Amino acid sequence: MSEDQTQDRENMSEEKNDGVSGTEKEKVTEAGTESAFGEKKEKVPQGGTKDKPSGEKKKQAPEGKRENASKGTKNKASGEEKDGASEEKKVVTKYDLKVQRRQQEKAREDREKKVGTGLLVTVLVVLAVFVLSFPIRSMITLNRTYISVDGEKLTQVEYDYYYYTAMNNFVNTYSAYLSYFGLDLSGDLSQQPYSNTLSWKDHFDELAVENIKLSKSLKADAEAAGFTYDVAEDYERFVTQQQAAAEAAGMSFREYCQTAFGPYATLERIKPCVEDALYVAAYHDKLSDDMIPGDEEIQSVYEGDPASYDSVDYRVLTFNAELPTEPTDLADPDAEPLEEGQTYTPSDAEIEKAMKDAKALADEAVKTVKTKGDLIENVLWSAASTTVREWLFDDARKTGDTVVLEDETGHRYYCLAFEKRYRDETATADVRIMVASEEEEAQEIYEAWKGGEATEESFIALCDGEYYNYAVADGGLIEGFSPTEDIYEELLDWIFAEGRAKGDCEVVTVPETASFVVYYVGEGRPQWYLTIRNDLRSQALDEYTTALTEKCEVSDPAGNLNYIKVYEEEAAASAAAQESSEAAEGSSSAESEDGESGSAE
Image (cartoon, rainbow, N blue to C red):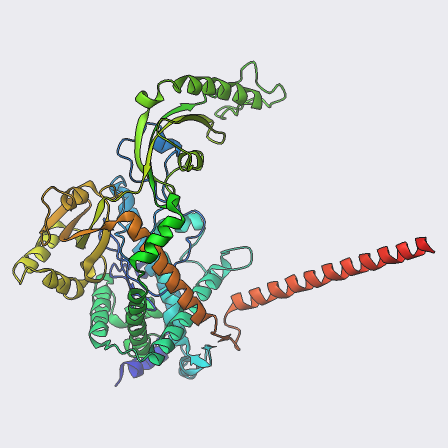
């Protein structure tokens, strides 16, 4: 009897309900899920995340996701980091090691890990347990067309694969922010607002459809280009990973497939989807490699906008306005009396007086800021605060220039002394990394490498084979580590240690966090070069895939995709409003002309 036949027989005999037991809600998996493009999205041990190219356009995080703080400051002013005079927007690519900061408390890491795995399985179980128990209805559901993309019909099993993948990836990525978003994974997602007009289910439906369009478009493009790729080995790895995930979650393999890929999913049923995903992922990687720009194009981009890639060094003294914490002579006479425990809000007059005093101190500091100011080094345009960046990166700026700048929102003044602007040519480092939660695990991996050929090729083989789940990327490769990278000091100290040579390999442990098996590949290009290269490649790839997906047509005859209906209604309402506005303007213009004609008569 086939797996699908077994599944259908069990569906006939088992009565499913809409609820989920407390035991089921506690089931947790740490092995991750496979994306629509074969991408492994894992909750790796604290200290690293796996980030492989998926072919999926990078979407901006929902509002509330904060940018990283600045890097490249060796001697930060005591108030500078806090006050925001130096802040950075990091560029994340498939080659970046997205590790959590050392300063994060272990308790928070544990909490995020629990949320990212336990709650994920909770919502998947809640959605998965609702399976139609009548065999004839189950058969119809499995075979009927759920939606069509460019004329290709997708069953609910196929659609669920993409829907659950989109939801899994979102939950894994933003696990720490779910409560902030107001997303209750144990509730009905169709009843929880994502926006003023869409629910969270609508949002995940939209993500799923975008992934389907991209996957189908890339597959067609790959086949038209004669691209070939044997997915057999990758598929076997996928199966092994899912089996390990099921075991870790305390589930049978059948139960795990249902929770991870939809209530009707079995390995046999989703196999075509997985194989397509692996094929498309390989083609996407080829496209990405083909779109790497040359040195001349990179240099041309730099020359066209050097400020975006240059660094500056400067000195700064910060003067915060001393705002009163209780009413003074300048308080608002009409203000309501403070209640017990209430924080006092200074009046405009009090703020003006405090800012005037702070400015007087800042003006006086101009005389000494060149020698007494805190040195801030290697700050990029993207890392400098909006208060100071225009002045710092002005082409007319020269060594010794000073200025006092007001931060009205922060109620402070900065006294700055400019030192220099330059293109940082410091070499980065390319490394290969595997991450383990325990030092013993990392040591086991290291011994496996050391006991073999102990070469870069054998390290890659371990990353892509037996220890695939520990590698941070394909072959474990991370390009462009900077000495000022905002990651674990222990890792940076090892990578940039004096005398570090190609082929060095060692276990680097960050206490109470993680252990890294690190292989040193060699020096890499400067950061400005890598930034431009990755930006150009991402832009070219986005433009290429957008052109492909724009041609895709989605058909939803059964009305399964509510977000399409919402967008159509919004478009119709907008068109009607525009037509009404134009009609009103036309009527007004006609009345005006009639009035002028009457006056002339």
